[in-house]
Image (tube, rainbow, N blue to C red; front, top):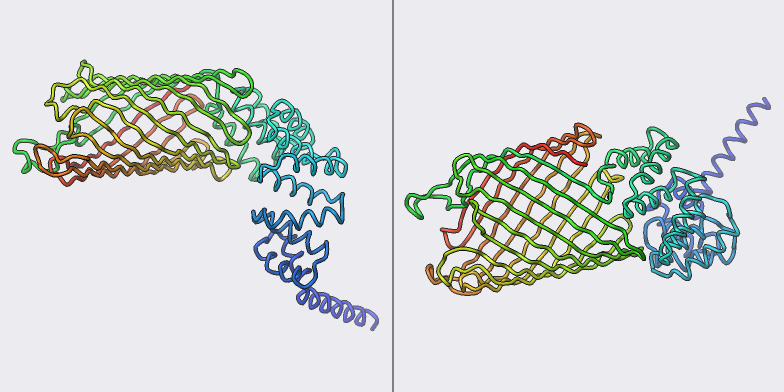
Amino acid sequence: MRSIHFVLIWVALLFLSTAFAEGNPLQQGRAQYDQQNFEEALDSLQRAYAEQQTPETARYLGLTYYQVLRYEEARPLLERAAAASPGDAPVLSALIHVALQANDVAAARGYLLKLQRAAPNAAETYGLEGRVELADGREAEAIAAFRRATDQDPTSFASEELLRLYTRRGDSAKARQVAETALAAARPDSFEAERFKATLKNQGKIAKPVSAFLGYRYEIDSNVALEPNTSVIIPGLTDKSDQRHVLTGDLLGQYRITGGWDAFGEVHLSGSWHQQLSQYDSLRQNYLLGLGWSGPTFGLRLPYEYTHITLDGNPYLSEHSLAPGVVFRFDTATLYGFYRYKNLNYTEDVAPSEGRGGHANSLGALLLAPFHQGRGLLRMTLEGGTVDTDGRNWDRDEASLFADLNYGLTSWLSGGIGFEWAKQQYSNVHDTYFVKRDDKATTLFASLSYLIDKSWEVRLQGSWVNGDSNIPVYQYDRAVGSLGVTWKY
C-alpha cells in the first residue's frame, strides 16, 4: 500500500512540476535553450523578460539573442547578466564574440580579462584570446593562444583558426599537423571529423609557396566561329563544329614578406589545336604579378595582369590590366571589391569603324562562401563598366553576373553547376545595320570531377551558350563538351 501511495505522490509531483513549467515562460525558455531550440526559446524568454526583468531572464534572453545572431539586442542583456555574475563564463564568452563582431576590440579585451579570471585554463578562453589578438593585428600572439587552446582541446574552434592562419601563410606542413591531430581526437561520426577530413583531402589546395598544374582536355565544340544560328542570314555560313586538343599549364607563387604583406604571381598558359579548323588554333598567355596585405577582417590587393593571345600563329590581342581592390572577411565568407582598368590592343585588318582596340573601366565584386564544413563553395562575380574603342561600332556598356556552386559528394568525387549572364549595350548606331546593337549571352555549365589521388584529377564538363542580339547576324548557339585530366603539385 505504501508503494502505491509513493507512486501516486511521485506522479502528482511530476504533474505539478510539468504544469508549473508549462505555465512558466522562463522555465519553458530554459528547457528549449538547453535543447538548443533557440528560435522556440526566444518567444518564451521574451515573454519572461517582459513579465520580470531579472538577471536570470536577462542572461537567458541575451544568450538566446546571441545564438540567433541578433547581437545588438544581445549585448545590453549580457552586460546586465555579467554585472550580476562577474564569473559567468558563457556570458563573458558571448560578450567577447559580440564585441568582436562590432569591431570593438577594446571592449572584447576587457571581457577577456574577466573570462581569464573566471576560467583561466579553459580551451575556449585561450581560443577567444587568440581571436582578440588577431582582431588587434597581433598575429604571432594569436597563433600562440590558439596553440594553447588546441593543446587543451584539439577539436575546438582554435584548430580551424590555426588552419586558416597557416594556410594564409603557406605553411602546409603545420596546417596538416593541426588537421591530423584534430581528426585523431574527434569522434569518427562527428561534423568536426568530416571537416578535418575535408581539410586533409584538400591539402593540395592549401596555399604553398609554389603550386603547379598541368592539364589536357579533349573538347567537342558545336560552333567554333560563333556564327549565326541559321544560314538564311548569311548564305553559305553555318555553324562550324570541330574537335580540339587543349593543353594547359598553371604556376602559382606566393611569398610572405612581413607585417601582413605578401607578393604573389601567377602564370597561365593554354594552347588549343583543332582537327579541321586550324585557322582557329590559339595560344593564350596570362601573367599576373602583385602585392597584397591581409588584416584580421580586411585586406588589400594590387595586381597587374598581362594577357597575350595568338590566333593561328599570328598576334591577335595584347591586354594590360590593373585591378586594385579591398578584401573583406565575414566569418568564413570572403568579399572582394575591385576597380579594373584594361588597355586593349587588337592586331587585325578591319575597317576603322570596326577597330576593337581601346580601353575599359569597370567596377566589380567577388564573393566566396564556403558551406557544409568546407565541402561546398559558392562563388559569385558581378561586374559592370564601359568599353571605349577606336572603332565606333564597338563602344559599349557591359554588365555580367557569374555564379557557380561546387560540392564534394564524396572524398573523391565532386560536382559543380553554374551560369553566366552577360549584356553589352552599344553606344552608337551600327554603320552597316543602322541600329544600336544590343547583345545578351546566357551560359549554363556543369562538371563532374574524380580525384584519383592527391595529384591526379579527371574532369568531365559541358556548357551551353545562347547568344542573343537585336542584329540577327550576331545571334548564335554553342555547346561544348570536354573530358580532361589534371596533374597538380
